Amino acid sequence: MTRQVAQLIREGGYAAEVIVDLREDGGEWSPVIGPEDVRKLDRVRRALRDGDFEQAEQEARVFELVPRRSEHTAAGFGESKQGEFKP
Image (cartoon, rainbow, N blue to C red; front, side):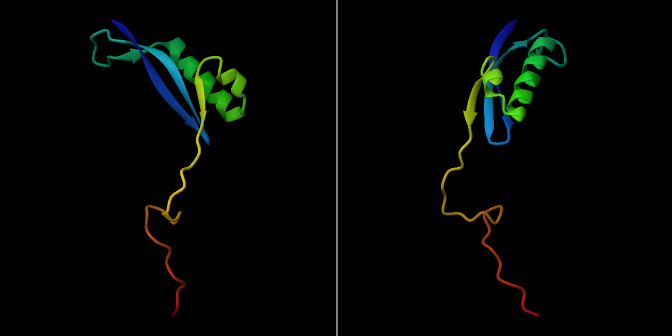
């Protein structure tokens, strides 16, 4: 049995939604994608990395990721910035 699913690829500030075929053959590793779909994912990833969006859009839907404005600081993991060290 084969069904189509969307795989998401993220490269830098861009993401791509690539449609691939999942094959369920009943084996231990099921479901799997075929070699041609793996090559398609690699082509789209490489195109995004190289900034060739026209090439990527031939096989995927391409999105630009835009950070959402937030009240949280960019200090990491939501903690607030520490003050200077005073010996």
